Image 1 (tube, rainbow, N blue to C red):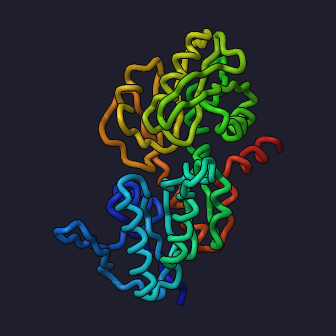
Image 2: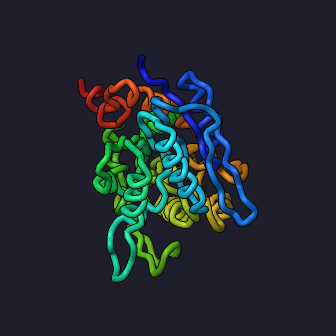
Image 3: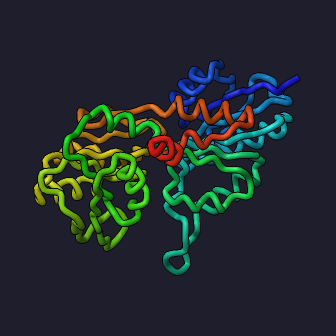
Amino acid sequence: MNPSVKIFSGTGSQKLAEKIAQRFGANLGKINIQKFSDGEFQPIFLESIRGDYVFLVQSTYAPTDNLMELLLMIDAAKRASAAKIIAVLPYYGFARQDRKDKPRVAIGSKLVATLLEAAGADRVITMDLHAPQIQAFFDIPVDHLDSSAVFIPYIEQLRLQNLTFAAPDVGSTNRVREIASYFNAEMVICDKHRKRANEIASMVVIGDVAGKDIILIDDICDTGGTLAKSAGLLKEKGAKSVRALCTHPILSGKAYENIENSVLEELVVCDTIPIKKHSPKIKVISVADLFAIAIRNAYENKSITSLFIHSQLRGRDK
């Protein structure tokens, strides 16, 4: 008898998990997150998962309760004799702490990987890690999905005539170069210098943007300061229009104010993190289909290469 697939959600990704389960063709599993008066909580599975493939959907954005909740869900599933436990993290928190870039700092993304493995995860499915090399922090399989699978069709339907892609910083160049190659379009770089976190001291544009329809590509939008400043600078340099596509809408601090007061035509994000409020400039695209396919392929031991932009590029070249 083949094991069943059961999909459960933590409190941080309830809406996305419901969509994923629907696209997969299953009901979302029943779980209760029991909370105590002191803030402690305890996940309780309300149905048997013995011998099943258990997929736990939870983005680990702030607060850190989301991460702890996921770890406890993994531990509970292990103790309930699940056959396989797959942690599905649409957004992998602490990913910006991927190296020791100054003395006496933690490498948070490595610590999270260690915690997930120690809790009992057999596999991880995530999307657009801030640094792809984070996959090497794991000694279990990691399926790293690419948001270009949902962004490319959106860009195509815009039918922009003078399309040029822009990296809001040097660290985004590889991600932007791949999408630019798909469209046979040019790319430019907004090179920024920071004095401290979330505060930009200076920025310059490398490349020609005069008369171009610019699309900024990044993995996260935190305070929106980089995007707003990049868009303003691109317009000053003669860009015809500027819009931004970012996978993870952290949108902290004055993010909504920064985006709405910017020259951006729109900010397009994925639903890896639920947005806090409506904004006329922010459009949300769901990644539920992508994760549902990844879950099915992981269960059926099939390749997920078809979900990557690299596969699309190969198909385009044929």
